[in-house]
Length: 159
Image 1 (spheres, rainbow, N blue to C red):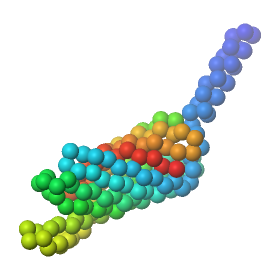
Image 2: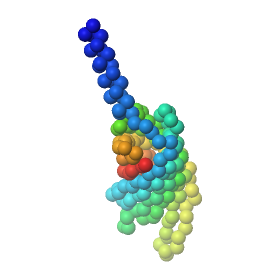
Image 3: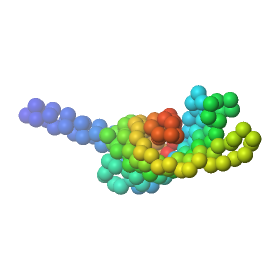
Image 4: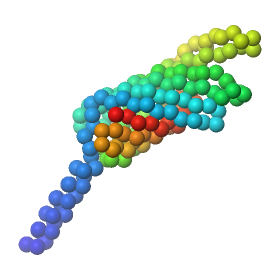
């Protein structure tokens, strides 16, 4: 009888710990992030749509990057992306995969100070991220390979 009671207590504690780790996900979240690299900096804004009890979210984001003066490629770049975020485990700290497509464009100055734009290009993107949920928000860190845009490391908050 004691064994059955002990097993039941351990089972209830395990279920409670699992429920505490899996917090409610909100259907729509917005976020801001950015990062600094040796060659420049970038900023990111995103909107994420998350269906209830489903590990895949749809994320739309815009990114702007600028290279520091004196670097080999000193021109701003921008990208619009549509990505699927696949959450590997819905815990308080949750790793996720990013898979999608990005449309990038660049502004380039010639040696005489004239501005011209390079044609936009659509590229496949992919990467890894880690989100830490706290209350209503999530602190995230991620790295994506965005082809011509580079491989930015972004840290930010979403709510």
